[in-house]
Image (cartoon, rainbow, N blue to C red):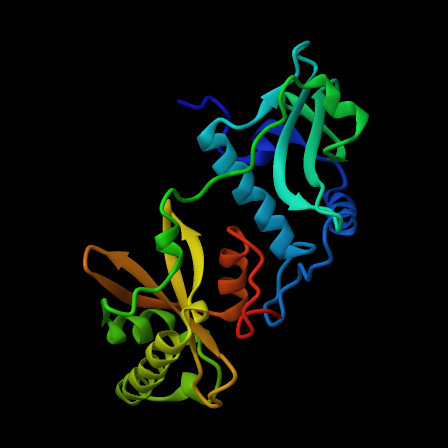
Length: 256
């Protein structure tokens, strides 16, 4: 069992976090790490959350590495440079008296950089699934809907004018949008985008409420034995944030 702290900031002291996020974004493949429609206090919120949850998974899998002399620590960010060179977080033992964490963040390092020669083996990427079939929507399975719950618990996520509708009217409207999403994923399995949530792979389907080519929300399909169940929906920023944990989405309806 892993003995690493569950949270990144409980293990590593990272000064000037906004600057460190900018440095990582500049080093990695070009990508939009900002929300499109959601206000947030965090700089580059998609990248900020990506690092938190990537670390959490790495800690679960015990995939952080300490150098042979015990003076350095590294973990695999799962990101790569434009030339596909893996990027690692590199830390040293913490000598900052004002910080409680055992490790001090030094910087992001490419696989070939000298500091990483301190490690006999480099840490592996986080792994989120053993069965690749979970990443693909099985159109032969029934999708069971809890439309009442989707509306009653998530109405604030709907854009206007749908947010102002009576619940029953919105439920009726939503059923049609979900039927269209199912037909769309039957024609193109890539329409369903996987996300990782609470230890499980789930699939995101587009909800196009006003324009058949523009998604307004994402409905979450949870895989059960023999069927899927959908009882919640996410804003597109929430959906992208969750999907990015597994991989950079390249599907047209969710990419900013």
